[in-house]
Length: 286
Image 1 (spheres, rainbow, N blue to C red):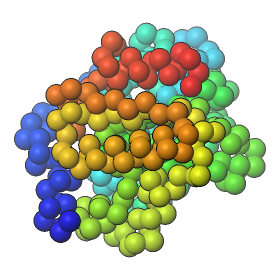
Image 2 (image 1 turned 135 degrees about the vertical axis):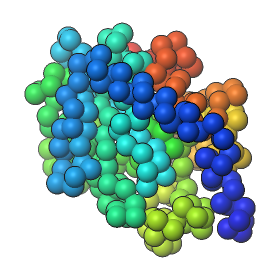
Image 3 (image 1 turned 180 degrees about the vertical axis):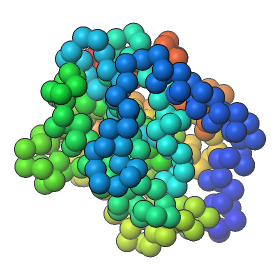
Image 4 (image 1 turned 90 degrees about the horizontal axis):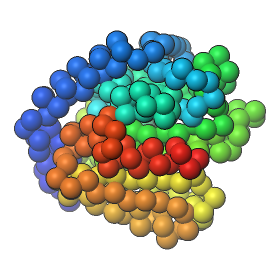
């Protein structure tokens, strides 16, 4: 496809004229979560100013941890718009929730962004005893760019980064409106701030990093809105097909009538399709 076509297919804000209201709602609901739920705010997990996280904890110790990674095409947004998902899990005692910030473009490149996510997860694994969650039950979810980063976390060789960390540090993944092949992104307007070359896009594309067999990897759920652009529907189809072809466990969800923004609310609403699927993953331990 030429750049004009890719620009249109990947411009979610242009495709959803109501996106300012959606983002404003996320911010309002996230502020309410931080005010109403037990929250350890702005914990530093690394040296970069954006390497901070919020941790929403359950009253009872020993519960699982759900880590949520915000979207924004690796160049916008923050955990300040992501904490609303704590409503769907902390209030009903299903899981502790961590929402994380990470460096973004153009200041940070994709390699640095991915390294930051891995640093956050290692920090959360090491510091579980201090905050009372079970470090052997860490799950990762994210939206859009966060969906991409969810898969980069799942495909990480953890012992290679930290000899004490288990290979299965992440027990399950839930990607929402994810981007799994960065090659189209490199050819679109989005790369103006990301500056990826072919090599960077390739080594950070989950679709290109799948092992010969995915049967030993944690269970995965991929969700996309039925009203999203064809690019996002294709990204999910191609990735789920490749994961299944290699023998892995994956559930594909298409949320009817949901677009790229209002699909996120599904994680904040108990009983909604995405929240129910994530809760089921937490309950069955993978």
